[in-house]
Length: 254
Ligand SMILES: C[S@@+](CC[C@H](N)C(=O)[O-])C[C@H]1O[C@@H](n2cnc3c(N)ncnc32)[C@H](O)[C@@H]1O
Image (cartoon, rainbow, N blue to C red; front, side, top):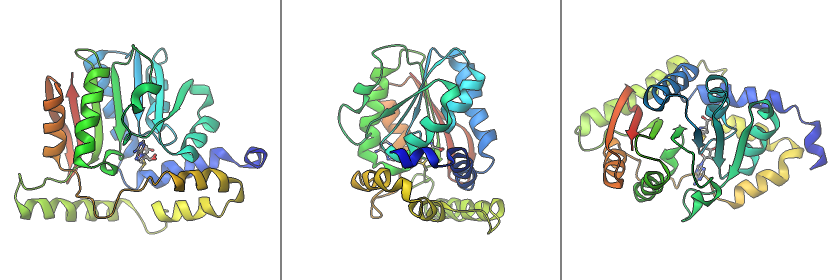
């Protein structure tokens, strides 16, 4: 791991944020809205989990807004967690390693104290069945009135009819193109650059071993999948508070 100390982690972190902003237009604004929603539901949370956090971009922004909140960032990718640990030190975030696809993933969390869970551009990795299991775990982990906020692509699906479903996808791609001049680095470019850094080889080999990328044949998550999962798990209120094409800010109150 000694090679890792020669890496300019802050550069890599900034590069991650720039790259991710291409997939969530006005990302900082959207994360600020997410935290505004959290505050309006629970006030300053006692404990906030940045779920499938990557390097903890939500948790680090939450640290500025909620200085007394106990912050957790949980992900399966050892490389992105290391990137978070090396750059977010000042924010007192606890980085946790777990795979949401595995039963018992939440055992790494504290027994109590969590009342907000936030996630962005992440849950589309999971299948609809895995979302059902996730909602059950979160319903058990969050106290009554606790809040879950997810910003992600959720297809409109059959509920809206095929034309609107496809239109929303086309519109999302159009909006991304508008927000992303060609010189902005995309997902593939970022990972190609990371793989060219010899110091990252061990962490990236472990990332590869964990098969993190979604199965390309997997059906995309729909808004109905998310809504039904959280309602069935026992969340009292479930709804969308912001939407652009098929990107939704989905909120569930326990
Ligand atoms: C596109 S990134 C977004 C990360 C972060 N939310 C952000 O905005 O910077 C998706 C994240 O989901 C994580 N992820 C995907 N599948 C996961 C799983 N099964 N368990 C935990 N994390 C997972 C990936 O490792 C990755 O960090």
